[in-house]
Image (cartoon, rainbow, N blue to C red):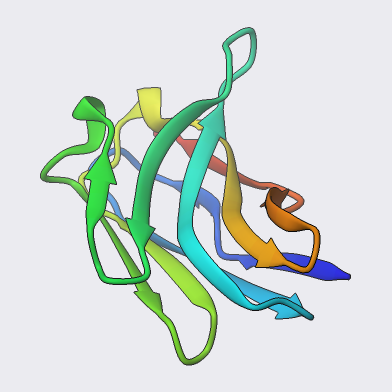
Length: 119
């Protein structure tokens, strides 16, 4: 069984910073990609940032220059540093990992953590 556990999130004022962390645990062979998605009320879930196990990162246009994704392959963790937060960043943020197990590669999700940007 594979589990993704997220920490971080909360309430922050516009212009502030938050850091999200996610740790994968369980039995698996590899995690080619880890990342973060978000879903605001009434909107579809969207990719925020992802990173491969060789460090290649991809960002949504709306967060370029403000958010930084990083991972520790030895610890199977991924982090999202969010700076210069805006009210439109308010959403539930979900950790995602594409994980290789005996039955192939599958998507796994964390439970979600709320990020609220408000004065």
